[in-house]
Structure formats: structure tokens, C-alpha cells
Image (tube, rainbow, N blue to C red; front, side, top):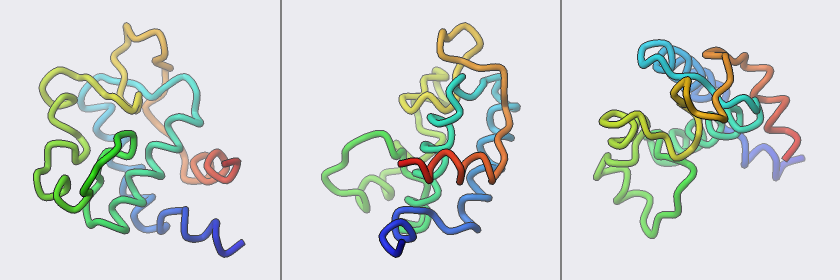
Length: 119
């Protein structure tokens, strides 16, 4: 039980990243992945990085030095490729023409916790 606590983000930052993700999707005309598990895991990862690093570093990439990457800001969500070209490596923010895009721009806190507790 204790090991799961350390892998989950704080409620505060999870809610913060959930709200950010929803408002950013609406503002950019993008949609969450049709698989809510993908959306939940990415938001949880962003929140966990916010807990551990102080910034929502993209959770879907490998970094040699996460602290240096946070300072560089390129991969802090929304990352530069997303801001410039609507390209989201994590499949969190998908354009409507993307075959993996769902029709939702919202996800509940409970959905995120339910999906991420499966892993």
C-alpha cells in the first residue's frame, strides 16, 4: 500500500493538472484520447512531476537530468511542439482529425484515480 502512495501525485497537484488539461483542451480545440486510461496516466504523470520537480514536465519522455529539463522549459506542459504545432507526444491533447482522439475535453478526479490505480 505504501509503495502506491509514492507513485501517485498529491491530490492538490492532480486537481491542478486536471483543471489545466481540461481548460487547455477547450482553449486549443483539442480532445483527450479515446482511451481514458491514457488521459489519466498522463495527467497523473504531469501532477507527479509537479510534486517532485515543481513543474509539469512531460511524463512521456526519458530525461538524463529532469531538473535541467524543467529549467529549460521546452518539455514543460504545454510543451513547445504542442504550443507551436499542436503535436502532443503524450496523446493528451489531440486534434479532432487524429484517429486516437475521443470526443471529451473533461475527465473527473475519480476517473483519473480509478484508471491509474489499475497500474
